[in-house]
Every structure is written in structure tokens, then in C-alpha cells.
Image (cartoon, rainbow, N blue to C red; front, side, top):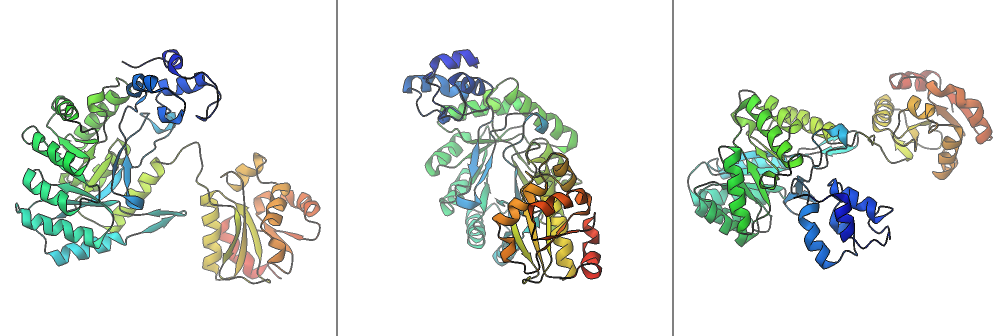
Length: 445
């Protein structure tokens, strides 16, 4: 049973040392009770108290990691039903299904193509997270060869979809250093699959036809010492997906029902419109999504959707402030200024790049706000622009000492002249789309 904040507080050191990142032990206890902090953040809790608090402070949905190093995929550890309540933390992993009955050369070519797929989205690199190797041949030898081909062609995370224990064990042996997700344990084979998961230290998929069967099965598996589980409720269509995934999230968060407090794997490929179903699974509330086919346009759309949902709504996407070079500028190139809100930055940078005119772009720290929003909030004013121009040594880069500010904030030009007395302040266009025309027709060095 969950402990209250005061009950947790009584077990803490009560030193108010702030080492946990909170001002008092009571504040930390309240965060633990709300499952918004982790017990490991307190370095001074006693071993006896730690044993009492571990279960009470454990996240409602267990964090499960698949893969290693920079290619590891972490899912779970979510604390809210809706993003606006706080935020979602761990994006669902997007995996492409690879059937083992394909020719090995075709498998390697397909995996290599997917492995190199990468799209830059407002400064964020979007990629497919890994591959789910499915045993469709019925042959252990064929399956192992396919797993090896996938691992040779890519370092990304791997899911092993083989419910036959002998085949699953052989596949796990091939990629034992990859920390693959092993699947699937069902009511008929779970004991053998638990042995394999224990042997190779793999997280394990648990598959059943109903939530009651899933809960019963996860309980049995946990008694055998396997804690890193992923649920496969065998979803069927849009309504079933919405109902079951929502029920799983609510049971974990609202009822603190531990047997179902694990990430969920979905396979939308059997749907009449798998892309549409995958979008539903991204929003509500899949942890691993296995797509039957790879299409760059579809992958891009799903990855962008995922990125938009799994960004903190309280923290705008930002780029690093600095002085950026576009089209190889020299000392005579124009110097423009904008904010570090990523959409603003990329709108301006893309227009400059497409114009073909070499430019310097001074990106100021506006705390991730757009031009007008930052100006209204006092985050994009003459003092801040002048400070960043000096911090990033703009005077040493441009010989003409002219700076172009966005047209929407022309009102700050007088103040900026006082802050930068040796500079000429020019007012540029209001919209990024007009930058090319301005540079060609108005700008002179």
C-alpha cells in the first residue's frame, strides 16, 4: 500500500541537506509520495528505511531499457495520464519488423537502409530505434542467421519475436551483448522463457489474451526474479487499442496496480491502416511499437508526431545561443539577429541558406521564446542583444559593424544604438520569408 508524504518523511534523515535537489526532507517526501521523485536521489537514507520505502517510492510504470550505449531505448517510468499535467518522459521506441524467411542479403540491405535513415527536425535527429526479428520460418537455424544478419548490419536495439523456447534461446545467444527484448512468454511457455531471460539477463515480453491473464502471468514471472517486463495485450483495432491501453495506464497510475505497471508493446501492422493505428499507439500509450514495413514518409510523420507529444509542454524547444555561420560568411557578410526558439531559428536560417547569401546569424538567449513573445516578456531587448553580441565576439567577425534586427521589434533600435554605440542598427523584415528579398535589395555593407 502506498505511503503518505508524512509517513515517508518519518523514515528520511530529516537533515534538510538539499542533496536530493529539494529544499527540505518534507518536500522530498511529498514528491516521493506523488511518485515524482526517486528514492535514490537521497544519498543519506538508511538501509532499513530504504527497504521500507523502495516499494512505496517505485514508479508506477517500471522503466525498461532495451539495447546498449547510445542505441539504448528506455520506456516506462511515466507518472501522468495527460501530457499537460506534467510531461511524458520516455518516447515509445519505433521498431521495424524483419521476418527471418527473407533472403539474408535482402535482410542486410533492408536493415542497412533503415539504419541510415535520419531526418533533421528543428535541430533534432529523428531515427528508427531498432528492429524486431520475427521467427516466421519455423526454423531455429534460419532465425539465428537472420538475427546475426540484423546485428551485423546495425548496432540499434533488437527485439526477438520467437515464442518457441529453443529458438528464443538460440536467438538470445546470438545477440547476448545487445540486451535484446525477448518475446514472448505466454501461459504455455512462460517457465522456459523465464529461464532464458534469467540466463541472458534479457527483459521479457509477456503475452496474454486479457488483462486479467496478463496480471496473473506477470505475478508468476516476478516470483521467479524477472522484473523487467513488457506487456503484449494482443490489441485488435482502434477501439480495442484505446480501451486496453488506457485501462493499463489508469490501473498503473490511479490504482497503483503493480502486476500491470509495465511498458506495453504493440504491433499495428495487422490493421487495415497501420499508420493510423500507430499514431494512436504513440499518443495512447505504447512503449514499443513494431511496424511491419518501412516507408520513409510514414516513418517521418510518426517520428515527428512522437517528438511533438514527448516534449515538455513547459519547456520550448531551443537551440544553443551563439553566432552561427551560414553560407560561409566573411567580414563583409550581413549580421542578423534572432531568438533561440528553435522554430524561429530554423525559419530564419533556412531562408538565409536558400538565398545563397553568406550571413552571420546572432542567436540570443530568449529562453526559447519567439521574437514577439520574448520581446513582450523582456527576454529579447537591446540589453540582451548587446550582451550576446559582445559575448560571442560579433565585432571581431564583421568589419562593417551593422546589425539587422527583426522588423517586429523595430521599437528597440534606439535603445540598441545606446547599448552598441559603435554599431549601425538596421531594421529587417517582419517575416522570415522576406529575408532573401531584403538582403538582395536593401542590404549594403
